[in-house]
Length: 515
Image (cartoon, rainbow, N blue to C red; front, side):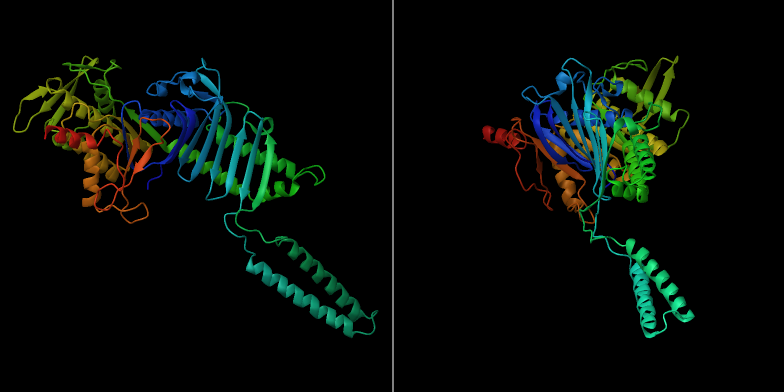
C-alpha cells in the first residue's frame, strides 16, 4: 500500500458522536442514503490535514481558504449538537503514525483551541504528547523488542573475570606479600578489577522486555516551544528544542534533576527522536488532498479564468497554465485516451481569448471540424472536468513528489450507467499508474458493481496478498447510532455481507414490482 492516510475516526464531530476508525483503501467508496454522513469524513480529513500542514500549534481553524469545500466555518457547526462534551476528538492514521487531536472552543468562533496533540510511532516506540491545556510536553520511548545484551560486551567481561581470577590465584600463592612480585601483581589485580567494574556498569541493571519504558520526560512548554512562527515546521522545531533542553539538564548534577537517568537515556538516544521528527514532518508535508465537488458545469462558449464558480473553467485554466506551450506530453495523451472512453471526442484544443477566457474545442472521430465543448451534453462536461483535474494532478505529482489523495463527490452526475461504470476503470488505472488514492462519495450502483468485476477479473486478494484489492466500500446507514461498516469482497467479486435497504436492492425491487 502506498504511503498515505490509512484511517480516520472522530468523536462529537458533526452528526457523529462516535465515528469508528475506518481503515481506508487505495480506492475507497462511500455509499448510503442522503444525509447519512458520507461527506462528514471528507470534511474531517480536510480539517485535520489543514491543521497539520499549516499550523502545528494551539489553534485549529475552520475558516482557512483551503477549507472552503468543508463549509463548516465555526466550532458550533462542527460540534455534535447532541453531545454534552465540550470537545471534538480526531484520530488520524498516517503511514506508521497515530495522530490524536482534541479541540474545544466557543460556538460562534471560527477558530478553536487545540487542547492536545499527540503522535505515536509504533515502529520506534516513541510517543509525543503536547498538552496545550496543561502547558507541558511529554516524550516517551518504549522498547519495541526485548533488549539483548551485546555479546562483545559479555566476552570482554568474561575475559576480565578470568584475568582477575588468575591474578587472585597468583597472589594467594605468594607468601611474601611485601615482595616486588607481590606488589606488581597487586597493582595488576587492582587495575583489572576496576576495568571489570566499569565494564559491568555498561550492562543493563535488569532484563528489559518489549513494552518497557526506556525513558519518560515531561517539560514545560515555555522551555521548549519555538519563540516565533518563522520555523519551517513548528512540530520539528519543538522536538529539536526539547532535545536541546534535555541536553542542558544532562550537564547538571543528579541531585538537581528529577528522572536524571531518563535525561541521560534520551541524550544517548536523541538520534531516534530526531529521526522520528524528520519522518513525521515528511509524512505530513507529502500528503496532498484535492477535493473535486459535485458542482454542475456551466455550458458557455467561453470559459472565463476569473469565474471561480465554474469548476470546468477552473479545470481548463489550471491545466492550460501547467502545460502551456506543450503540444505533446503524458497529461495530454491521458486526456485524449479518457475523453474517448467517456465518448466526448478524440482530440481537443485550448485557445486563450484576450487573456480573459478559454475556448475549448472538441474534435469528433473522422472529422476535421471542431465543435465547442459547450455544445456537448452535460455528461461530457462532467467527464471533462474530472479528466482535466486529474491530468493537472498528474503533472503536479511529477513536480512536487506528493502523495495525492483525490476526494471526489458524486462523479457520476449526468453520466449514463455504462459510463458510470467506466469511472471505476479510471480510478483504478490512475491509482495503478500514478499511485493516486481516491475517496469517492457516490450513489452509483454501477461503479460499485464494476469494482466487483475488477476484483474477480484482476484476481485481487486480501491486503496481505501479492495482489491486494485496492477497493474498499463503506456503507453509511441513515441511523447515526449505527456506525458505517465495510462491505467485504470475496475472491469471486461478490460481497460477503449485504447492503442496508435502499441501495443494491432498489433495482431488483422495482423489477419485482413490474412483474
